[in-house]
Image: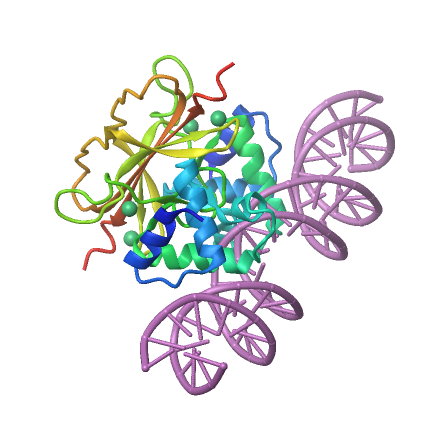
Length: 140
Length: 140
DNA sequence: GTTATTTTTGCAACTCCGTTGCAATCATGC
DNA sequence: GCATGATTGCAACGGAGTTGCAAAAATAAC
Ligand SMILES: [Mn+2]
Ligand SMILES: [Mn+2]
Ligand SMILES: [Zn+2]
Ligand SMILES: [Zn+2]
């Protein structure tokens, strides 16, 4: 149980429970997006899948993590970083890379989401740029 | 049963069946991405959901339609257009707009997918740019 | 430290979507 | 029209998301 996880939970006014600490630790260590089913497995079935579902839900509502959509079919979540707490307000408009081999998805904070002008009539609110391919570790 | 649907099915060497014709007609008329569950409803339960699933699967494999990922959770498919049959080969790298109000998703062919340079080590293969917001019809 | 209050958890249960096997039905070529 | 293989509908299953509820745990008050 890292000190950082405890600190974060207190900052966000969340009770310190085993599940929350372990989930947060996992996200802090691994620095990538994770799904509820994968957490269940990675945390050795120590927690019920519903508990993990609700933990991720709570973290998401409080703004500790954000949703990451890729083509894997199941929703993933990544820890909010500096890139999220930008100049004016909280936003998650960064590029995500999804490796089709290991199925891992990471936030690419180094690259800015390019600006786009849409045809008239569309009111954009959120951008999601997903790149699929082979990640660094999977390169043969 | 439009002539265009029949023509397309023949072009792609697919047998003319009620389900395929109706699905293709729907895509030709509506010009937006559609999911299997929505098709089931839109086509008034005239076909089994498994049949619709397999129809979309077949169309996708043959290159008549392509997958569209948005945050709705269920996979959608859109008819391949001119933008798909680009200069060199078949590709689906166009921008998609997902309306969070009516849940409809459309291909934005007018806008090019911006080019991005990734940190070293990543081998990009496919790009997916989804914009969420309010569409033309849903504007109050 | 004990007790009271409030939150969190685990379980059961349900829905929706994706997927497969199989036998009946249909589309096509002869 | 008949033979052939392709397509369909049904049944069935697994995975993921979601909710209600009572037991258990975390904090607050004493
Ligand atoms: Mn964030
Ligand atoms: Mn296409
Ligand atoms: Zn990988
Ligand atoms: Zn709309």
